[in-house]
Length: 110
Image (cartoon, rainbow, N blue to C red; front, side, top):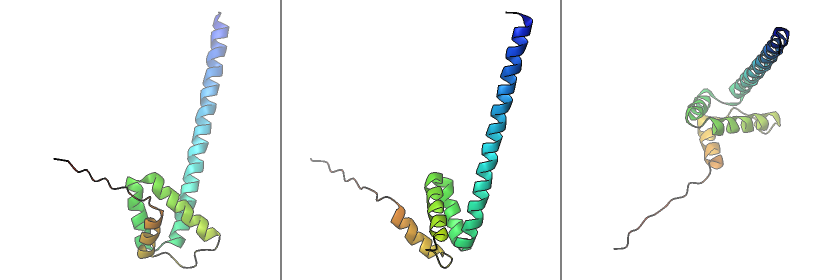
């Protein structure tokens, strides 16, 4: 393998890495734009206290909070949400979509 071949391989690899980095940057920008649109929509749908509650939930359960946000935005877009959702209304919604917890009772025979 000559110097020219090595230089060509390096050049191709570098171009490939730059293209990959550019694609990652586009994905990041697309995600940021989507997040900004979601936040704008949520500002129109939720009262400040409800938005604060959802942001708090996002810290501990990000996937769950994101799913609830998407659901709320879809409901608003379809016209099923007429007024801003209050904190109390959000609590009810969260209780409805939270999976039921199983309780285990351990008894010792003895």
